[in-house]
Image: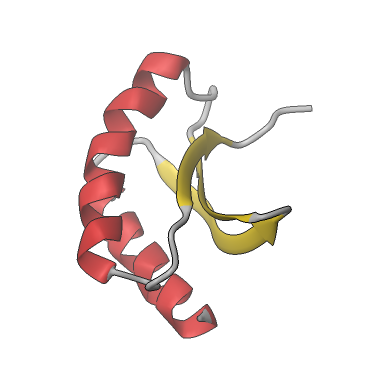
Length: 83
């Protein structure tokens, strides 16, 4: 799974290389009875909700193309926390 996540992250980095968006982390983990594929995005100055919504569109297409698992999961695209 780690190799697939690394390849997925590389594809996402390539997708956003012409923008100010940074792909910080891509993880796949089980929380309770659900699996989560989490993509953490960042940008100098932070990302607002509108930017996250727009970034989710290409993320979703790339994730679908990778077909990382046969299990169902929740795609969670989030902004890196500041603090």
